[in-house]
Image (cartoon, rainbow, N blue to C red; front, side, top):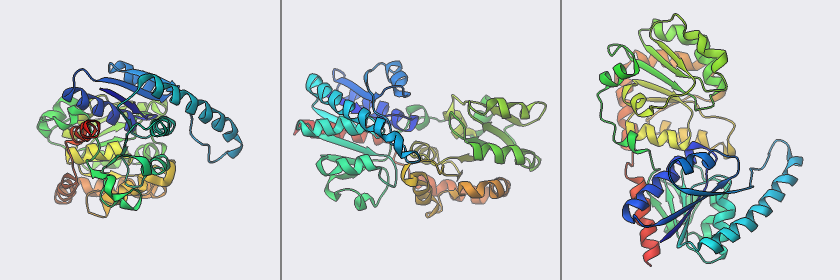
Length: 362
């Protein structure tokens, strides 16, 4: 069995891809799995570290702000299409799986032209351009939100959820013990602010202005500022009790178990993790993403009372007020937790692997 998996660019694409690969291997230990990513992107390091082979394409995204640069983008796309056709011809996959990201377009298009069945994994509540273009010829489309018929053929859609890292699905520590392991007082509510590995400027600025109000209200603060912003913000924790500022958090499984409230961007992977963990959350969507999909993701939760949505432009004036309010309102936090937990689909990778198996067997 030969499985081709393509996509990447961010952890939100790579972790689901690796989870799907792991689920396929559990069904078929002898399956050959090849990844196709984008040259210079993080999948070129993360995938080999997980024990899989990967080939890079010279593809890059379109520059919407500086259209004149897209001549080079089109040249890279043409080269990537040629290379993708060679990869498909040489590897001879039984199926090609696209998880989103720059590389998935050329790879799955080449597979479809060669008559190879394809499966799309759409992580967001608002479908990306690449998946919409590939959908007509896809054998299956695995989605994480209801109502995706407005983007895709209904007969191809299966609601599977997004694959989530096993350590988050399997986490079982009590909140108190998780707080102890992170170095916090288990008697105080813990607010975790997570802006991603690179950081989020708006979240950082809001926290810098209001961190004292959060700890004065009786909470502890764990603030991941990101590696870009660490020199600017990490020193703010010096001499402060109940406050940790770090550039990166490696044990997010502990954070989800420990935190009484999480402040985060609204990427698809993060939201799926929040759903599995049942974490009360304030979502501040990034405005700098294609199709504004983070806002759509956050609205899908806030409309159901499963999270609080604050737009990026409103965060400087509203975010800390909302954090302080929720920190002092356990009943409202529990309501958010109950609603977000209802949206969880914890067996996504196994469900997708079963669909892959069914397509190949046919």
